Length: 107
Ligand code: SF4
Image (cartoon, rainbow, N blue to C red; front, top):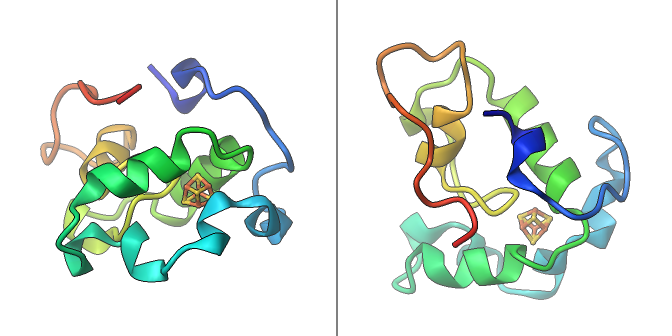
């Protein structure tokens, strides 16, 4: 499965065009919310913010590009609705760290 299979509803801007950040719903919230490791709220609140975000697909695509080959520990925050572990699971260049695909997609 790839990010394209996740069913994200809208591509506002193409990957690599950082202007999608202007469309992100997270631009309106405390940045710490999107970094559950910094927040007592955990990742649920960040996922709720990402779910309807029109920039979600471009955001996730850019995250996957920027983080290619990184271990889970080198990825931070919820991006495109996915946690660092979930993004790691989508990266075919990361071997042996996160077997299997996400059970959390669509949460
Ligand atoms: S998908 Fe989430 S992290 Fe990405 S821009 Fe939208 S709200 Fe922000």
